Length: 511
Image 1 (cartoon, rainbow, N blue to C red):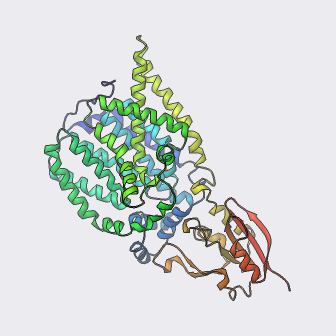
Image 2: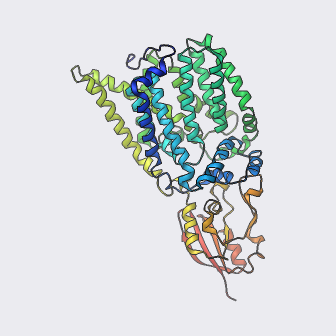
Image 3: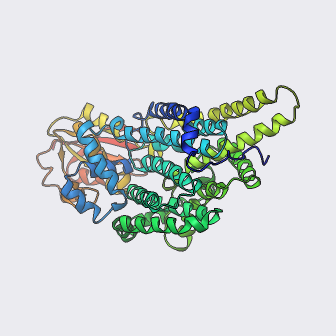
């Protein structure tokens, strides 16, 4: 199995030109477009959820108040919010519009993993990696999300292509390495934890036969990275307390690490990990200069966050490791190539070449079939955050409420699940309604969310109101808002369950 994955000879200065000259460019572009299309279809179907609300609400702020927000929270997402600010100005804030850049970024990442696979292995491995990547549930998930993870993943893949090219060519000229350092810095601005990709590359440099000539250049590049990324590094570390909530969510579990992180399904995870293990064994047996790079990218970021999660502070969640999904796809492809080659050699006949192609094809189809269930589920209306129904709630309000009615919201839940977000994400549905408990709109505050008063404090504001709509997360017992409104003379006349939210219509009781 050791010769199955042997690299092609690496003639310095001709690697990329030779590979693209053999047609990998159009092939990568074609798979990239396919990756975009497959992940674009249905991306607009799920309702927005809390994290996307943070993106949209931050992007809709005036630039001046966005800077104020980033000085207090979410500086690590600042570059994405700034991009989204101008994007929304041009194309609006629908699910289709907000998620479209992520679908494009996924296509770019798929194309990149094909290029990287072709640089390091045979073309068949590259093609299989691209196909696996475009159907992998973690890739599908980030494609349909208005966050920075897909864009950062694309950067991580192409940054690694640049790194591999510099290392293979034994580039000792300082300028290309400094440019590499600037790209690393840019990736950190997109999302803070992409600093881990630089750590992966550093391990690869230390393991490289060319480390004596390359190490100083890579270190110089990292100096540039630290200088260029200093503001985001400082703010990111200062604001780390905002993710302490992870300590109470129990995210660092075996199930989430092994299944949810990349695969989303037990059967797909079982097949995927089996092929990854075969791929790792094949890499270790091979003479590939980049086996350490690939294994480090697969393992090191997850290990770093889990160790940090245990000994420093909460920092692990599967979405933070989205940029490792393409390498999981590539390692699955390496495993498929090794299995195909091994099974083909068991039958010594003229059919060996056909079998070496047919067996990987069958395995890819099987993996795609296993992934299909999760991928389709991720394109259903309530797919986000365990059942976000903010759009559907807004549709209920728009269909039933009338101008002059008041609306109140369940304020007892965590902000990312607050029904109030429906009004900020789908404002036309609430046009003409009175936000009875609003104290200060989010655009007037340095934080992410609105400030609201309890219903018990706004009896005067409701004195002339005949109808109140109350949006509550499902729970046990009578919601506190309902109890307070009943004390103010209102009675529930209709209850409309949506999904995880219940809409109550209350009218003032006649004496």
